[in-house]
Amino acid sequence: MKSPEAKPVDPLKRRIHTIIFEADTAAGKAFDVGLLILIILSIVVVMLESVVPIDQKYGHIFDVLEWVITALFTLEYILRIYSVGNPWKYIFSFYGIIDLLAVLPSYLSLFVQGSQYLMTIRAIRLLRVFRIFKLGNYLMESHILIQALRASRTKIIVFLGAVMTVVVVVGTTMYLVEGNAGSGFDSIPRSIYWAIVTVTTVGYGDIAPVTPLGQFLSATLMVMGYGVLAVPTGIVSVELAHADRQAKLNTISCPHCSREGHDEDADFCKFCGYKL
Figure 1 (cartoon, rainbow, N blue to C red):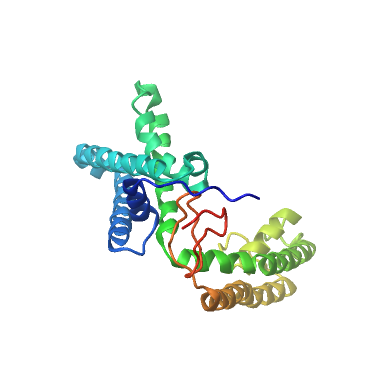
Figure 2: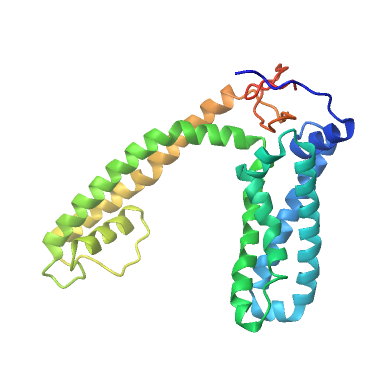
């Protein structure tokens, strides 16, 4: 595949790209900190708006804050599109869509009028909580975490498959043991639901065995539950330690494709071949 030709980059555009997409400079770190503060503030505003007494008293302040935050996120979104070498690729990327969802609901609410649509407006405005997904785009450790989760995926899927097999078997057994005891195990799906609640150590208590054999199986499943919680944690922890040792990445972002994760001594993007 032919690498994209490195065209002269506008110094202003390159400067904006470095500040917004990278975190190796003082300006980039300051931008990230300010962005995280805005994200957290916007989420706090959403939460407080859902409390009726607080919203009735400070609703006008929340509206002002929301539009100030929306304006800042809109400016950020425009600058991201302006500074990247391939704007359409960014617009349709995961974080590009999340960035759009961070500002779109506020503008949509301007065109939805009438009291009968108030609930629709509130539902649309709830999409602002998608801003929290942008947090992962500005943490260096996100590369290590994603790598560890990917490496753990197959092991965890196999483990969860084994757990589901145990849950089905135990749930079916409990239906046979407790089905006629009037303890709530009146169907296999309901018994499997009880097994899931028990093995995850949630323990709602809405269904409980009454026969000695059922109580023995319940106690056994409770003890197994601790292992169910510990095994995935151990798998991910091992992969995290391994990924941490292997990680030698920086936050340098390719001006053309905006991908990160390059080696410290890389001169060209390992994803598209563009000169860094």
